[in-house]
Amino acid sequence: MTKSEFKPKIIGFLCNWCSYAGADLAGVSRIQYPSNLRIIRVMCSGRVKPEMVVKALYYGADGVLVLGCHIGDCHYQTGNHRAKKRIAVLKRLLSYLGIDPRRVRLDWVSASEGSRFAQIVTEFTEEMMKLGPLSLKEAFS
Amino acid sequence: MEEVRSLAKSWLESRKVDAILGLREKNGHIAPHLFTETNELESLTILSHIGEINSKYFSSNRSQRYKKNVLFLLEQNYPNAKIGIVARGCDERALIELAKRDQLNLEKIEILGVACTKEEAMNCRCPKPYPTKLDVGKRVEKNSSDMNVEALLKKSLPERFSFWKYELSKCIKCYGCRNVCPLCFCEDCEMEQDLWVKVGQLPSEIPTFHFIRWYHIADRCIECGECEKACPVDIPLLTIFKLLRTDIKELFDYEAGLDVKQEAPLLTTLDETPLKE
Image (cartoon, rainbow over the protein chains, first blue to last red):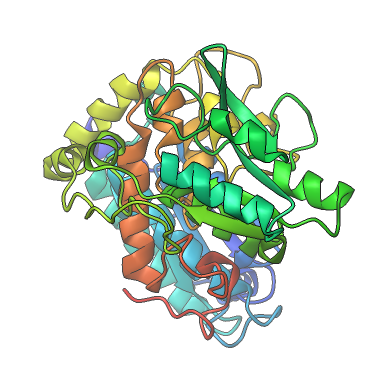
């Protein structure tokens, strides 16, 4: 596959209360953003176990986006606190394994930030284009 | 060694403790034993040849599904007994970390702290080769740097990738690292869930299979190195855990196994344990 035709696969774990609604708003407002993102709705960004991120990468994702409510706005008070800590440790671990930690991104998108959602997805997709394909399963076997 | 025996004897005689958990040498073999009589204490030993058996001998019995440690079971059966335990630095850290996670009650045990020799500390690449409650022996300082860690940090990302590709490809999914770990006490282990890995099938899912334990132990690893010693194919697991412990220290200013009162940072909110980036 040449770099020009490379279309990164991105898995997005979006929290039900803010980010999923934010994505919805982006859709309703007809904001354009790259179609590389496959969204999985979770109840909270604190629901996202690091195993889920690694499994996504293992089975072919080039990057993983985890989006949740802004700190202080979590529907479950502190779910996103945990997400933030987990992803910080996860990124370090990935870098020791030789996987670029930029392939995982945690960010906050509220229900009213449709354009911010589109901007994050665009940025992240562009970054994955630069990093190129990961194909973890094939590379490690 | 004699000092340990005589101290143990005086503890038993003065009824400071009702029994002492330690290692016993019998017929040339070393195994854990609960000493209740003073005349038994002649056979009490501390491992001089590390690696022969798990030095965290009080940890859970892996042959059973019920993964409770020996001290927990003792407390269940003898709620009023006070148990002395011969512990090195790593043993003490494991005890503290287990107590923090409600796996045993520190009030029911009395630690008989033994310092490791310089040679033993070198052998284990130990970060703290003496217990905080030191009864026998002298403190030797830890090794300041670790060759394997430095070698990995010098590598670029693609080099690290190929390094782990080779190392992890040796894995035979024996679960030895998990079984020997004093802090792996979950009754339902994530490494045996079909959701993440194909249980009982080789080759292992690299790196998912290994990653699960690395992450789960991240804020509780006490850096005893038992996993690396247990690994039949010599995967340098301690390297990862040394790095992880440094990270947890950097990110949360937290070290596992030092203070029972300190809460595990991955279980608390950002207000309780802030994240430093």
